[in-house]
Image (cartoon, rainbow, N blue to C red):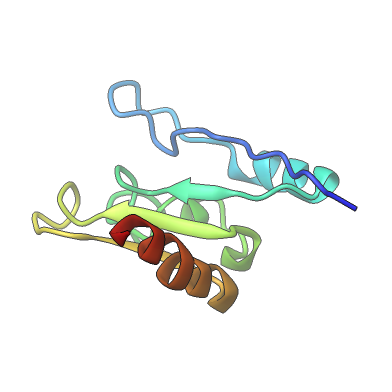
Length: 104
């Protein structure tokens, strides 16, 4: 049996307009349709939310409702690099399957 999950793709913080994605609505849809949420916080981490922790902090959502958080350090932290955060299973898949596939 094969299952297909839908994914909602949206920019978290629109660079020029300043609109913030309505994350609670996205999470509700995720739960309703058993989809995944991948959140790119490149423009919001360090600048959005009462503690500067991004859109999840802004909307006071449970971070475990987001399957994967990612972003760069170049925009908010004037540094180099980036991050990807998720469950142990997600990180295992990225490190052991996707990265190995890229190196071949």
